[in-house]
Structure formats: C-alpha cells, structure tokens
Length: 210
Image (tube, rainbow, N blue to C red; front, side, top):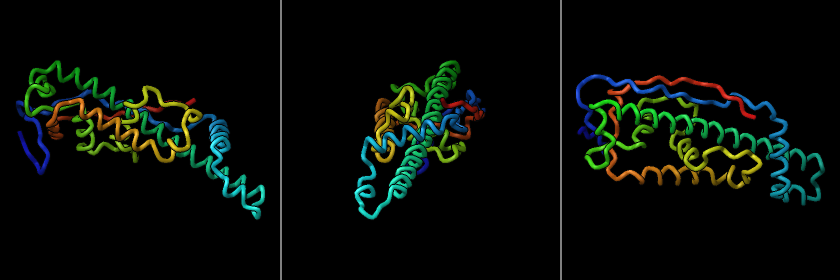
C-alpha cells in the first residue's frame, strides 16, 4: 500500500496498466423549447411571489416589474440547465462505475481490490476520485455534485417540479448529502486507485432535451 500525504492507495498486482471501459458522457447542448421553459420559470416566479419588493414600489412602473421577472426567469432557467449538465454527468459516471466493477470482477489481479473485508480496499467512490486524479475535463461540472444529484434523482425532475429554493439554494446540499451517504455505505478506510495504473477514454455524447 502506498501512502501519499493523508491518502492511501491500493496495491495493484503486477506492473501493467489496466484499460477500463470508456466513460460515455452525455452533455446538454441546447434546449429546443427554451420559450416553454422560460414560461414555466415565469410561472414559478409568479406562484412564489418572488418580486414583491419591486411590485410594491409605488415608483416602479410595469416595465420595471416585468424586467425584474424576466431577469429572475432567466436566472432560474440558467440554474436548471446547470443542474441538467451535472445530472447527465452523474448518470454517465454511475453507469461507468458499474462497467468498471464488471471489469474488476473479471480480472484476477483486480478482483480483490473492491472487497471490503480486505484492507486496504477501494470502494465505488474510488472511481470518482480516479476521474478527479486523471483530471478528466468536465467543463465546470463538479463530479461529486454530479454523482450526488444522480443518486438523489433517477430522472432529473422537470423545471416545473423544482422550487425556486431548490434551484437557488438547496441543490448543493442535497447533492452533497446524497454523495456523502453513498460513500458511507462502504466501510472505512477507503483507499484510492493509483491513477498511473489505469487508463480509459472519455467519449462526449450529445443528447436532446425535450
């Protein structure tokens, strides 16, 4: 077992580099009905009464109120699209981890690395750490948040099902709690996988959002 700083790495038998399944990443290149999404976001603003201070200002005209509503709607849509990007990344990573577990199970030299009754051992979260150690380009997506969102939602709920509080404040804490709980399902201590012993491709795939 190698120890670097406060991190422990499992010992991979032999000296060869192991190829892992490709990570098939789904991205969100655009939304066909952005006008519809903006309409839903505007409805959320109306229902949550998010512009009372502007609307109550006796010096504010209708144009100012509508401009404020438009700004808030754009912000809501932007927050939601960011969550979609994270969720699609998380979905891809969870599926990749399943494929990696199959790969580990089929190779004698890797099979025991995931057994929690042996020490040191890796866990499913070790694959997320491996992605971070390999400096996989995520275009600003946080992998732990992405996986946490996927763990919390089997399917990302449509924007109409998301409150403004969730979009603005709560999504980070929900994702972090889900990710931390997931890690804790594996007995400690969890060792990392040495990044120099593994290689894989990242394939960027496009999906349409309806």
